[in-house]
Image (cartoon, rainbow, N blue to C red; front, side):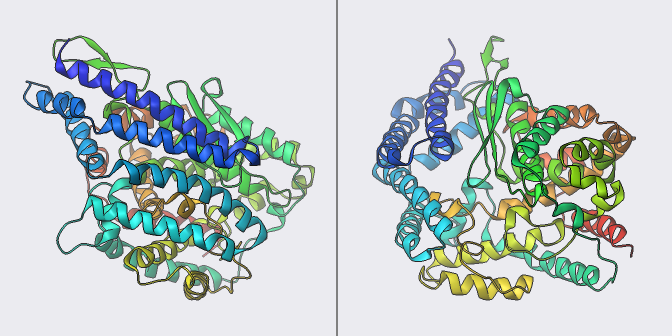
Length: 509
């Protein structure tokens, strides 16, 4: 067996451990009884320690070094390069810190659920304080480039090589353009009615509609499932096992419909990665790809591009509603009072609102920019935890023009900080940027796609994404993949072209 084959086998065993830890996390979010919280925290800490010990071992380091001296092709070299990147990052973290992050994060997650439900920020504040402190320790251990900041080290976990200053440089002008567009739409005088999206929609009927859409767009329910949770997410556990979650509001069916489509976008990326396949080793032998970077996602920005594309560019399109309208009316009797065009316009209303995951396309990125600024300030020590609700409400008013009624609809709405996922939020907007740029290329290369959607045929789009995005794993960086697919570096104009063109038409401007 070649050293390369040994390295991949080592990675495969590590990925199996990770899948077990992910299953524990999924269970905690869905079916675990409340009394299991303390025991689950210890289980998560144990698993995190085991994975860290294995992922930082001398044996793994020696295998990587040996492979770096072998004659490898481009794909194999990329695989070793990414093994090295992960190893070098992990070896900077003490195992005790890794275990404490997992233990505290598990407990903080349960505390967040109660605090959100009870609108009790003070109950969550001590846990958030602990997670911020532990995240700073992690960032300090990672280190960052001269002229950078602690936040860069955390951002790098989710969007490799990105920096806070670079993100700020993109977000600031984009935010100004989005604010101007939102104002233009508000002043149009021809806003769609929200009647179609405020009908009574029983949860079981919403679930049935969600499953119908999942099957149509190509999420494999024989290799996945859909469950209910407090905050929707997707977990790609292992080959043949990808879990989606959603949540239901009987008075607002688009929340679950688009939440389900969003998570399905993540899920189809996970199912599209070559986890169950093989690639050639140095001697031509077939090597299982699961557990190697070749079967892993590139970045959360690319991951989010898939979820936002299916949620918005497909799900909020007129052709999609040409297809799904009848089925939706069959599920929700009241919807039949409105014609297809009224429903299409309603799901594209641009109206500032409190909840990010239910925000419209025009204002969504402003929610992300709010969180980016706040978490960056918390990690830098410029914003105390006690002052978070006030800072949130003040910035929310400035960005979205609304007075936040309570912390449940404000700084307690997202699960991310309870897990210590600082640096995650910017990837949502980066995902929108990637999605819009990919979308331009897709529509050039796949003429007639709208006609497909109107018939409920999403196969050509899914195949294109499988072949051009998913199949590469981490062979390319996010920026390299963007240029490979679109011929251009990432830019904000495709997103503004997409949003401006679509929303002005919806508002009859």
